[in-house]
Amino acid sequence: MKFRTTPTPPKLRQEIFSLGGRHRGDALGGARLELAEPGLDAERRLLLEAVVKHLSAPVSGGAKTGGAVSWASASLPDVFYLAVILAAAVWSASILGAHLG
Image (cartoon, rainbow, N blue to C red):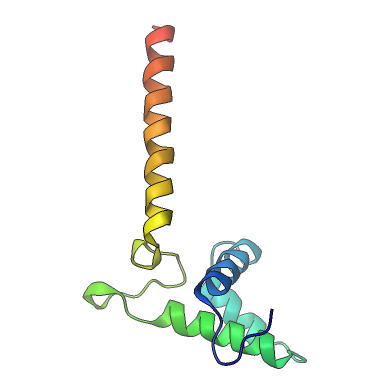
């Protein structure tokens, strides 16, 4: 996928999660490490720079994420799916608890 100036939000989000997986949860540090590697193509460099910019930007209240994905960067569908998963876990625990004793 080619992008001209900045990567799309889904591509950016995908890369943040990939970096977090490759660098033990430190997506910001991982992006900075990978930017320092020689031989990066222009598209990859642009994507990593966008990740650094996104994760370094202040969120509400002036706090910084420090490379972790925060609730401030989660989209509404992400929050909805997390809420559904949490509700299912609570429901499952209540059913299982009733049967166990």
